[in-house]
Amino acid sequence: MKSLYDGRSIGISAAVYTAGAGFLAGVCNGMIGCGGGVIIVYALSRLYENDPERTSRDVFASAVAAILPMSLVSTLLYTASGVADSGAVKYIVPAVTGGIVGAYFLDKINQTFLRRLFGLLVMWAGVSLILRRAGIM
Amino acid sequence: MSIIEILTAFLCAALSGMGVGGGGLLLIYIAMFTDTPQKEAQLYNLIFFMCASASALLLHVKKRRLDLRVISLLALSGVPGAVVGSVILRGLGDGAVGTILGGFLFLSGAASLFSREKQK
Picture (tube, rainbow over the protein chains, first blue to last red):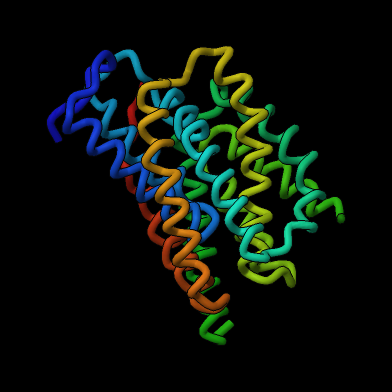
């Protein structure tokens, strides 16, 4: 793909590409409560392909920041439609501490290895979930 | 809350902070290993992700990793997307959502496994 973005000014094609990825990530975030990050990381990796200033760490950090407002809106809409949120309280402390630790170690861990491991785990989980819903597992 | 659950949530948050997709992992854990209904599990995951990412962002901001122009575009287009996704969800049963989630996880896992990344 031809470079859409040089890190300084965003042209029309880059803006449309980025907005399209954002919208798709938002739909996933609202519909299945996760997944937007994978779409944004993929899109930004392509967007920054020829920008020497941007690293994969910037891609991951920007993905985290972009998903936050989408998650907030999805949370408000879920709650408004009557989905109970009382059980989420117990995850808050591990979430806050784990988030800081993860951001700290972003510079120190081999991202490629981590993403491959994550990919395998998530593929396994996806198949297991489908088989469970089909009553096979 | 068991030690296993605390450790799982902590590790998923650490992965979320790195942008590796740990938010999805917590949803998998809740959906597969607890009796939480699907939509409720998704809401827990969203709240969990917000807490993990907000704390991670403190460090990301400090290290100047954020491209605010691109983030604004993503957020401005993503918020209406989230509204659309949430509206679609209202019309779906837990079983259908679980199957869609399973399919999505499989594809995103494959994408993580086989995609190229910036090497820098």
